[in-house]
Image 1 (cartoon, rainbow, N blue to C red):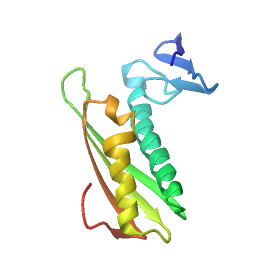
Image 2 (cartoon, helix red, strand yellow):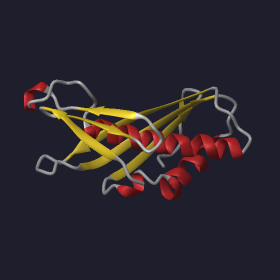
Image 3 (cartoon, one colour):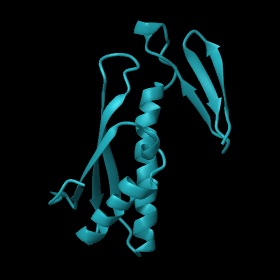
Image 4 (cartoon, helix red, strand yellow):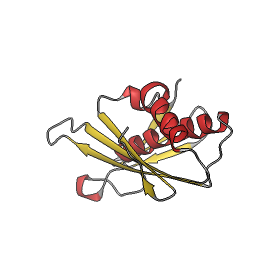
Length: 141
């Protein structure tokens, strides 16, 4: 995969993805940016969620299961010292619908342990929990 990211002045950058989508990135005004785009670290957390979400929907679909709704709440903790990398990332998967709990747990485990290329590209400890139809799961994954 290859792409180009160009500087747009001050702290702003824009990138064109190989799939044809444009991304805008910028820093906060406190560090010289103008808040014209997402922070790269925000994009990173979104990428982790998007990657694992795509995995889970794909796995559930192969199991002939379709959630009515699906939301992920993601929290990232960063080191205090530079490079201020993410040290932990926690993802809570909230699914609604007629879904067997064991199948949901299996889909999450497969994404977390095997398939999500974004999370496996990071050096952060990633934990997961879930709720199904508003009921917290019996286990952390």
